[in-house]
Length: 164
Image 1 (cartoon, rainbow, N blue to C red):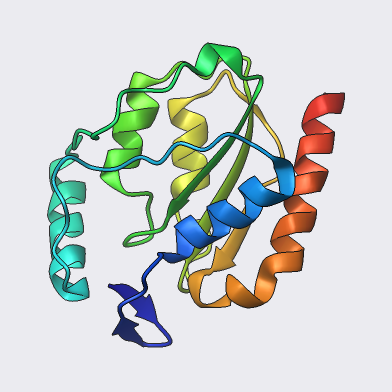
Image 2: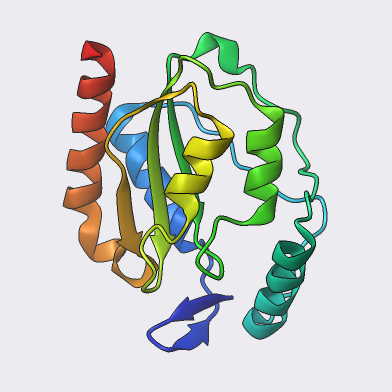
């Protein structure tokens, strides 16, 4: 269930996953999805209530798949949705378990009005030794009509990452 133009709707593929797919197709990048062990409720309002409780508790939900071997990558294209003006807590779990020192990071997110919220400053605080490339925030409802913008950002980011 996704927030969609002031209401909620069931999307077969979420906005952030759709954006990640556009990026992956434009760049040929490998992909890995942070999937929480505990599934969130189908109902949007119940999910946001649970997300708020996680934020208030500063929770670190575990994720299903084993951590990828990040040592093989110089550039990490890192994306997530914005929940309640922040990155989901399971994303913080990933960041807390990762060492991205010296890695180039291209950060993207989907949102419905808050832009990056606090996620950019949070990311930089959790991974202060990374090298940050330009970021991109797209409203989730605009992902489908922003394909060219997303592709151009991704290609430009890859190029910038190769030259830094």
